[in-house]
Length: 136
Image (cartoon, rainbow, N blue to C red; front, side):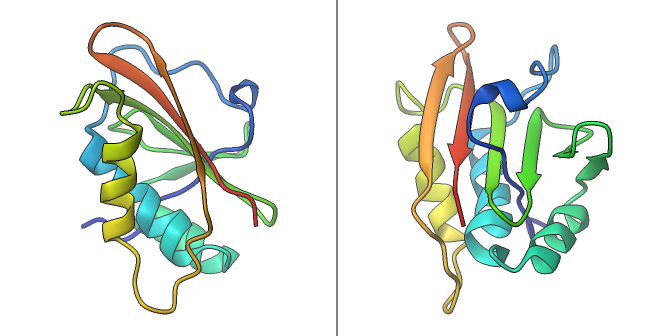
């Protein structure tokens, strides 16, 4: 079910405001990111195909892949594979470590996972904006 995950660009200004009322679990966000950006990228065709296979749709006006159900935005291009997620609080105070665990589980032998940078910002007591930045 989680065959692909997409990315976000460096800096949160490149993303639209998080969707109201939508969140995703850290597990879903991590697995989607792991599939697209850790597994398929830097192969751009494979990364975009993986994102689309997982239900992401390209918004041509912003250049972002957005998921219609969860608050997930991805930017996949020749320079970056980044993601922005609105996630519910998990088991940890900050969701970055838990997200990285789920993303790592998606890495297959031969993949070039890179070393993404994770930033978290609280939106409320139970919601976090989680941004992951990975350059080629």
